Image: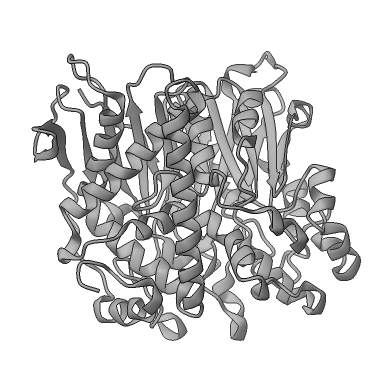
Length: 547
């Protein structure tokens, strides 16, 4: 185990290690500046320097314990010298890995103890799948990157990934190096939700023998997020919002801004909510300089036979999403890019808002909203602007497209467990339909995305997970550290400036719910580097004005 955080065959080491080091580590609120150069064939970093002539430069501001978010700004490719674009991408990753090494280590401990503690054999099978997938990806890059813009883009993403690994191990937290598999887990975390069903088919949910409350809990633990896109009645404004549902152990958050000055990209600048060691959002919540905003929620697959189509000779969701974000000019091209080499993992609904098609107080033009849904073997994408013109688009972990809905097995689930499992009558669907009209301004938009009055709301039926911002920790004897653990909101003008309001932590909804804390039954859960109690408020996120 020397030189590694853990040997995946002995994953229990993670649990022992995390318990030994649990607690809050003091963080400086002063941003750390750095520049990455290449000297004599080696990448080196200089702290306290912001130099445009370097390959990459940027700032990490560790404000996590005061605001709930660290903030990372990275710029790369602005040197007056001609630099190989792979070096530019690698340097961007190197800078991030170096500056956020403590957070990467802590996050690795927390999520691996959460995911693998009871399934050590899954880690062994997952490592084999990820190795095969990466070998195939790099082989395809070598063959096609010089002739195909798609694979050139994947090459840049993998170069940034390589830099992330190198950067961390150039500055390992507490001298604990991390192997490549650790970073495959971090970036492939969403894909792992479905890979467990592929590699460990015996763990596939037995939904036919679950109670309704058990299935609701399962969907919360395997679904991911609530989204609302809201248009005011006179087109005075458009709001785009996302509330993540995830394990509370994963609430070590970093808001990121990438500015990659590489020719041929539709979006050179992207802003997104993220996590340590992730080159993607996962939530997802992105603003791009192309004029696109992307939001995402996760759907469940109840048809186990679909997973037989999942093979390592494909691109993982995180790779295809990053590529589409950089190369797509509009919603249609975004869906086309995501469809290629579909892995059938991290099966989501993606909403692509083309901000250029939203003319305030004038009109919503065609192609303003494209919706993309993926399952194994199929990706469907269509212009759903007409729905948005009616006032709002909601998303809540149930497929919208009938073909995806049917192939995923939802009709059988609804037939057995009732209409609350359907698209039209899911609890969050009913709440959004009832309350979206209350959105008048930014404050009321924030309110609906943090909403949870499960004790009095008839649509919640007394279940704290049956609300826009669910709280699994309030389930009593069935409590789980899974639920809605953040919210991000932007309006049209903010999105154009890469800005948002963001809040980290489970909802307290106007003081009616207790703040979550790592005490009592949750005291022994791995929460390295996390606050004892979550009482953060909304903070403004915006990119730094770097040279």
